[in-house]
Image: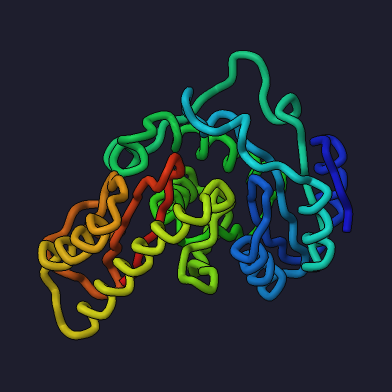
Length: 275
């Protein structure tokens, strides 16, 4: 595996790569969810590039940028074991310059849900992902479906800006207890983790009701809210949307999402159901 930390070396190495390239963008603190993205990239492509970069522009003023878990040596070992070809781990000074050009997310998709609570978040995501795609020039880029709103916005970015890359959503990976894997799960105490399990329970409950034929999103949202309320978690949102992130009243097969964000202790957790 080639470890690269500067843009000049990355460009030189990328110019030598033949065949299809798959790319996985991460902020490190790698877990099995990231490894499943790498596995998909390796299966579909001749070369797999992974980036590790804790991107400052997608964190708000009171968010956990400084506390975000960082362990490059451990992440490097995991990438080597997974068969990654190139690991790109730049410093912020490599990625950002003075008086940067900035980007805005789409007005309707980018300032609701995560974008409502974190209004600068998706501008930072778009900025860094676009930079990374320009540097790595992949044919396919892989992102986890847990961050559903992010995936849909990045697909729209690629479409609107005529980028020659396929943004591929990959299924959520869960721990043995059902909690969606996230680098932020390490913030949870044992009691908070137990409390957080109401989130996958809510997801599974509405999934079962949909499979039983329920189509009213109002009924399904009520089921989820009841489960979450019993554990006393703070719910930011828990609702149904289509792939344009418009609220829907009835389930539309292969076009619907249930999106949920809740706070357990001081940790914001995301989960969802793609229908």
